[in-house]
Length: 403
Image 1 (cartoon, rainbow, N blue to C red):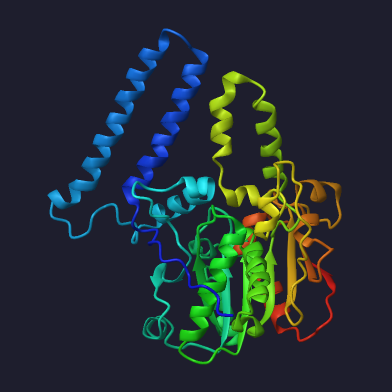
Image 2: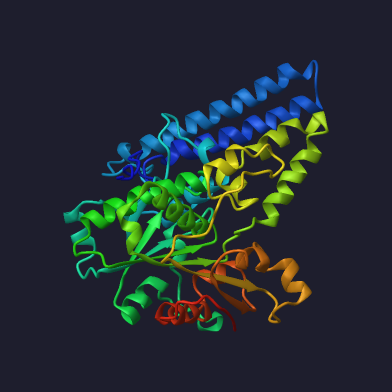
């Protein structure tokens, strides 16, 4: 069965000013709701007038920002974010935070899943891929970023004091293993299962149009990216995607396989605050957090899990063992330098606990690294050494390692 093609819903560079205005307008709506709840009755007319003026100011300001570049003769409007690293990161944060709610006027969804080279979108046709990857290898290593990140998160300035070389993992692997790194950007606010399905389609197109025959695929995901990779592998198995037979390894760096405690705490907080009528607008704001964030509470990979969750974390039992032939590595890091310490078990890497990142119910090699936080997994030399060592390892029996 041929998987569906990837969605063509527009680049993240297009929404620009309209996207920002929608986010600001949402904040104004919440502020007005709180004001009305605190000061009911005769104050409603005053509140409506004040916030009406604020909305008018946003609309006028947005119009000026959109038209100013054309007025002064610039060839490209300011709303094009393709060249702006800061703006691209901002869109990534907004997508991850509020997901499907963060739609600019007109309904175009930002940050469709795309392949990126030098942070620019690459078409999934043979000519575009050949131009973007002139030294393409048959061994393809796909990198998937985490929540509120973009592919830029894998890149960093040199910092010897923090064991960072300034060279991304992909470029280092290209030299050490003669492979082709492929960086993917996606909307982290979508359900993980939706992103997994989109990755199935993207890899189908990529393999079909790759400049040379693909002989091997390795998937590496940071945090949520690891769950997206696992979801894609399961869905590819269900759909009979031809590229699945090429996947030999799947690596998850700090992925919350059994859930993220921060999101579970948010669910409990929303339930508590919902008991107070005056805090209704705040609770509604909390409910706007993205589907991707909500999935992280329990590590949902499949649509059947989140669609049947009644809000209490009750999910359908789904077999999450990867297909035979795909070897996994789960990397867990802790702030504590002592493996198994109480502090390390409780705090983990500040975002994910080692128990969730390791998930010993799965068939995977395990690697623990001490004295690191969640975002060190994207850059730190010790992490890269573990990645390279495991990729060079030809063993077939999962085992546990620590460093």
